[in-house]
Image (cartoon, rainbow, N blue to C red; front, side):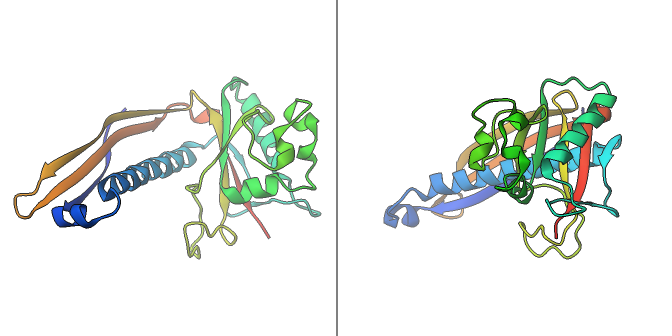
Length: 224
């Protein structure tokens, strides 16, 4: 694996601002910057997973599955069921499987009229699915995760969370499919030589690689 990805941040905290401020701006800014680094890392890994998922697909960018509960549409729980079967055909272990999608998919997934609200879908008598949350219990063998950073193929997307007119994707896989390494993740404070201020900077250096594409799956979908 090549460790060749890096993101960084840097900003200055003026001494006067520190003295006059009613809160600790440096801690707030560092926390915000660190979150941005993690968010970029998440988006990059999901992009690599989508690119590396070449074996198991349900639908395509040009012919996306229509997700929903009306006639001719496919329910989200059936999407997971189909992808689970395709992973079975690739001899992917049933344990340690995961599925990740954007909030729009999980909103439809948790629709009050969905059959997934029954205890049978989650395999327990008091399913957390009944309260509309993405549960920590497996559904069709998948642990469920939510991310705003799912890849899309839309050329008309106008904002970070504008999924309606986009071709979206659900990614599934096994923990053995992707490897990541974080080599440097640190923050430091330096004294500015040109002003009365502290320079706060940080960097995250990492690598990522799809090592088992057959253990990944993608569903391309759209909504009405």
